[in-house]
Length: 231
Length: 294
View 1 (tube, each protein chain N blue to C red):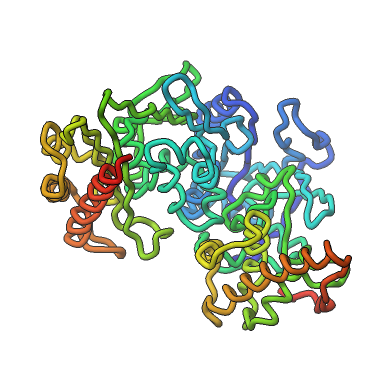
View 2: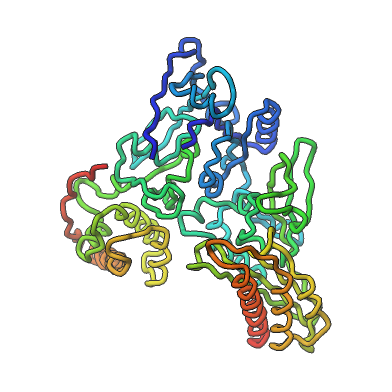
């Protein structure tokens, strides 16, 4: 968990070409940069002088909003999302094991610690910040609260997002399917019984609410969304 | 974490990917191809200075080509487990193996090409692909070549790629002689099934109308420097009546063909014994499928 090193864009910026998309659709380098800490790089690589790093401009949609980010070639999606204030994306093991950093990319959960930010170009991301709508928690979040599926909360964003992807794919999952969908998110507090119950309840609630809405135009009871989670 | 990287290329064609890789490599700094990142990012190789990303290449497909199914290299494990064609092929062993290759998030990222090109001895796709006599298509700037998967692996994390790019896996459709039948099975032992394999194994058996084995394939992973076919065990089966006793004898022979190591996940002795158990289970599964009259 090294703090991200500040980028010194002093070098070469003035004469750098404008950023843009190459004819073949690749992300183009924005400008060459001399980076602070280049001496460390040079020492490690045994090479003299600076290392020319080409930052990239990527366009992504996060929680329905178009974003334009400047990222370094080696930036991981986890680091960029947190840098941009999406603190619901949790930093855990950083080796793809614990799943706390899961986000949905085009509707499917991935571990953002294993994805380069540059690979998110053009993709549609959903973090837990985008799950509640109009100040109302999603039925999945309601179910996690109602069934004691949240304790310290560190794994909860990932669990909620994995549930969201599961229910989109399979609105009436079996318990085995639920366990499989949550298997890549480690919880060290409650264990998995409560979250599994919560997911099954959310599935049932969504089905019932859907039926109810269809019959009477009723809206499910929602709880106002809480304060945004801190880092 | 990868702040030493100075370039991240995102080509959209194989030709461009190869050209970029080649010119970067000529410049003398270390770099690699990357796709799902589930191995590369975890390896945290700080000597890498550039990457050529493959996830924008048009290589994400499973399609029929002649008498084979062709898997594009950047198809994810999740793509494979969902593919209707792969679920029908060879009792679905490939789809089944893909479904065990890590958690849902990992399977949404990790690719078929990466699973093979990383050359982990424990690669879950390797045993079923070896059983299915699969080949890999390698693109280089000089052209494309196809080679049997078993010649592709050279050692732990070592392949014959040498700057080439694995673009496709070709899986011939299993052919069964008139009146005969074939069955396939995949077995894996991990802490949980979605964890890295301590041992994985696949088997494919064809029998004639009288229940005599006409062809056998047994492959194992995580018990030698590379995934491999247990050819002496296969030879024990061919020409003989395929029954439980034959299956158990072949499993014992297959275990003798392993060259396992001891590591944090299991001792060599445990791996060898579990190799026997898993091959026996895979063959028993084939036997059961024949018994069900499919």
